[in-house]
Image 1 (cartoon, rainbow, N blue to C red):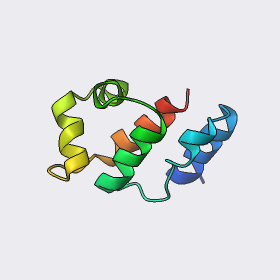
Image 2: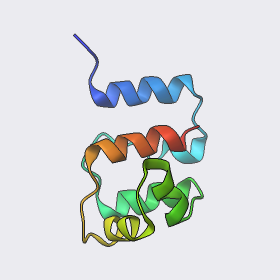
Image 3: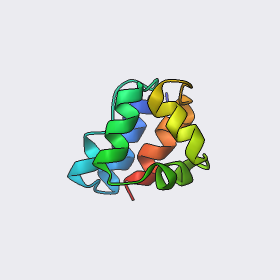
Length: 86
């Protein structure tokens, strides 16, 4: 049976030696809150534009995620955590 998504993220993070500042951003929940998104971006030291570029999202989309106007898709949350770790 394949590992859960959360377990897969932890495996990838361990393999790529995530910087300590980004490890704080990996959460059990795959439905991030606006606070989690903003905190993860800040912990990784990225602008909203750079954060969005990691997953193909525009600045306005990231602003909407952080303000709570839109929900970040779980697939984008997983992808941004993996890419920010590199």
